[in-house]
Length: 96
Image (cartoon, rainbow, N blue to C red; front, side):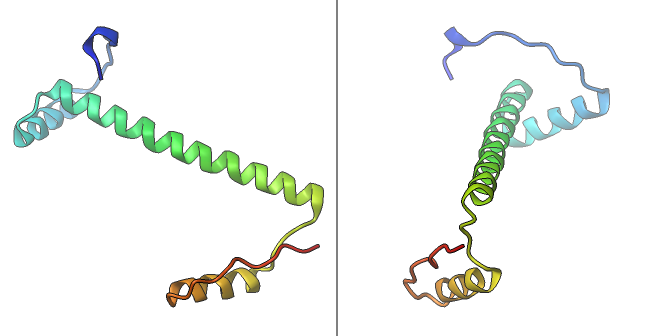
């Protein structure tokens, strides 16, 4: 992250959280500022992935509703069991 493109943002945290952050930063030999930036970066990354997963699920559900194509739970379970067993299995064919 380039410092030339960063902007200061103020947040209000309670004294207990502030002290916990300071203790962690000291233990990691980092500054509290670094620790908070890293925590925010990780949170945003995780939530972006979660949102993408959610949007993919909505898209898949809408496609299923529109086309009727699906696999049964039994078909999916059998395929996953083969993968878990180390077999190179193709996914089941979708059907109406």
